[in-house]
Amino acid sequence: MLVPVCAVSGALVVAGFFFPWLVGSVVSGEGWLAVSLLFFGSGLAYLALLPVGAGADDDATPGAPYLLRIRHLSPAATVRTFLARQDPVTFGVPVAAFALFFVAELLLPSATTAAVTAAREFVLGEFGWLFLGAMFLSVLYALFLLVGPWGEVRLGGPDAEPNYTYPTYFAMVFTAGIAAGIVFWGPAEALFHYRTPPPYLGVAPGTDAAVVGALTYALFHWGFSAWSAYLVIGLPIAYFTYQRGAPLRVSTLLAPFVGVDGLDGYAGRAVDVLAVFATIGGVATSVAFVGQQFLAGIGFQWDVSIGWLAPVLFVGGLTLIYGVSAESGVQRGIRRIAGVNLALFALFALLLFAGGPRSFVVDQGTAALGRYAAEFVPMSLFLGGAWVADWTVWNWAWWFSWAPFAGLFLAALSRGRRVRTVVLTGVVATSLATMAWFLLFGGTSLYLQHTGTVDVLATVDASGGSEAVAGFPVLAALPLGRLLVFLFLALILVFIVSSADTSTLVVSVLTTRRGLAPTTGSVVFWAALQGAVAVSVLVVGGGEALQAAAVLTGGPFAALSLVALVGLTDTFRRHEGGHPSLLDRVRRLIDAGPKGPSEVLREDDD
Image 1 (tube, rainbow, N blue to C red):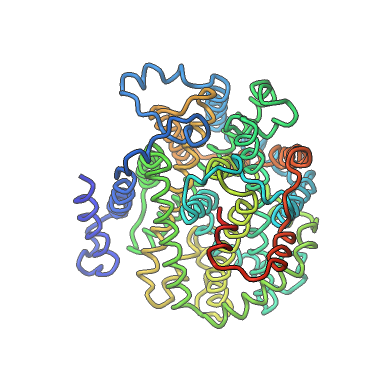
Image 2: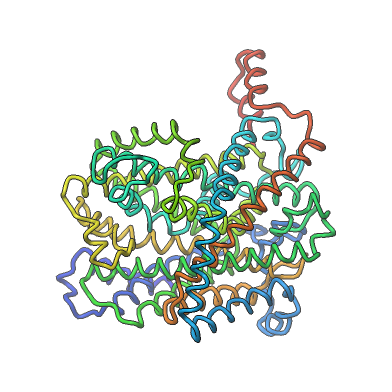
């Protein structure tokens, strides 16, 4: 069924993109949206539903790999056992919290928004030092693990083997953790810093110095610091899950202090409830905001108006796509769509580099990288008033609020990997890919704005200040503009699917009773709830308030990350002695003399 749907809708979309005169103006905005969703959705659903090799989709061994396999019960059994398999606390409390939030938003919208805004200003203003300090320590800890002796610890024991190839491992970690924020902010953030330079830079707006400074701060907000937040949550979960038999839960962070048996107490339950709320709230608002970007692209491409029904149609279609992907499990939809995502990402970046201002991007990007490296420490510790609270502290809170689901997913995928490999993947490789994107896309936007070729900021202002529209005038001004816009829309959709299917699976694991794998019913419920929250944001309003409420959960997880690192460090010190550091390994290789390639590869193999 999906193949002919994909073929027919794809032919219409391609005709509308590249040969608009064939179609004319007979299709409405909602029509183009429906056709686009049919094309992308049927293609992604087809990938998710393809079978895998014999034995690859099932694992009867208890543990993290088992929990990532969806239990496919009969429809009657799914309905009959649904509530019995849910944890009453981690399932019931977040559902009630979302219901109360939207009732309050519907009945008392001004008071609800004012209360959340006041809480946001208080937390980000008064506790900015906590976010800055926690993020900076996270980077230092990642660096220490990278070069220190504990980087040699293999998660799951010396004989454990990874469950996924390294390219698959990287693709799933990267695409789940970055979401569509990379396409949403890629063309826009540097432009805002160019127009209103951060106080730390001390440069005039719109100058050559502002160009370098804008790129530097984009790298800072999306580089090594950001990804370290996932690591300091995910690595302790992975270690205590695979080495100490703790459950695959965010509350496992507390295992060194309360013991594995004590994780079902009040503290552990509170951590898991907060993780579920942060995940659903954060991803649902991202779905809603990214929907606005996709709809802006539809309107820009075909010059059609988008009515009130379009956002609901988009979120409904998207929910169906990521729900199918999540239900198919890691081995099928999540793994394959992550691979498609990474391939599209690389293709788009290559075309953008080929058709964009290469010399400008390389020159300004090199200068920005140098400044980022030279001033990383003072930028990390800079408390500069309202601007830092609105940008840097807000970003750190956002990354920490996503850390529970992204960190737990990193932990679930990391069995059989050395700690050093987890750090290299979860922080270094992901950061390099993200920074390359911001240098490329942000540099291209800055070139067009700085040279006066395209006034991108004027387009943003004309749209009410929405960052969602920033990428489209940039791409339209480049060679192969139509192809780039087409790929950009595909990236928007695939990136959010890659995060939403993962968050749906992770929440299903967290809310299912301990030791049980989630069923189809659980996955469908949380996918639908996530979509319902996104639709409520678009219809009822309160998107900014819900986003702020979800981001505020980053405060407890920033503090919890420090607690987790204390517990992990003490456990490493007591139980993981005798491992060589990276320097020891290099020295040993030098002392041993030249080796054959096979010997070196065998020694370094993960």
